[in-house]
Structures are given as structure tokens and as C-alpha cells.
Image 1 (cartoon, rainbow, N blue to C red):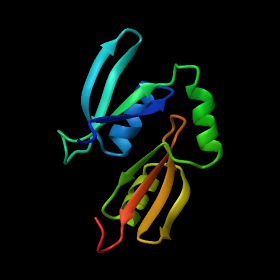
Image 2: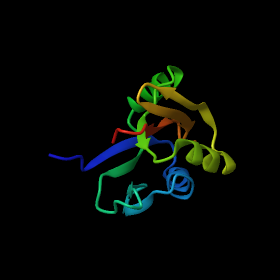
Image 3: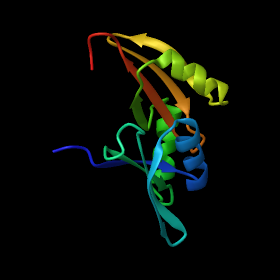
Length: 132
């Protein structure tokens, strides 16, 4: 068994695509019109056949209170691994990405948290040497 697809709920799919593609660097896997919305997935550049992230519209009534509660408590909706957190932090900061937590050591990992501009917090994780 392996992860095929997971999702983040986004307020605006075009805005989400701008952020996840142009800022975070994911590439579009599927962009299929489905009425007003789209089946819009992105993948890591180096894993075009790897797990997909669905940029899913936040239209379901349960989504808004769910997202609001997560964000109010500072809980990320997604977590992405990076090779060099300081380098990514500097790059993304230069692109105007807002961080709610700067790079911080936590045991065997370093993490930072950013705002995806679509109603979510996203955690970036760097595994310290000796872990994968």
C-alpha cells in the first residue's frame, strides 16, 4: 500500500495553483474542468509519478469551521519535506511567503510553518542528518 493522493482545501483554486506551483515549486499533474471547479493536482518535480496533492475547493459546509479551527490552533493542514530548510525559508521569504514559524529545531527535525494564502498553514520539515 502507498499514498496515491491527499488533499488540502483551498478557497480559490487559481490562487492555490499560483502558490503551490509558482512559489512552492510543485508541478501540475492533472487539471481537469469539473463544472465550476477543477480536479487540480500537483506533484513534486522529482516525483512526477509520486503522491499527488489535490487542491480541493472548500465548498463543503464542514470545511470552513475545520480550517478555521486548525489555523486558530496553529496546526498545519499539510507537511512537506525539504532537503535544506534554511535555504527554502530564504527562497520563499524572498518570494513574499509569510511564515508563522521560523525554522526551529525539534528533536530529529527542523520545521518552519507558512501560510499558503488559501486558508491553510503548511509545515516544512527537514530531517536532521542520519534520518530519512
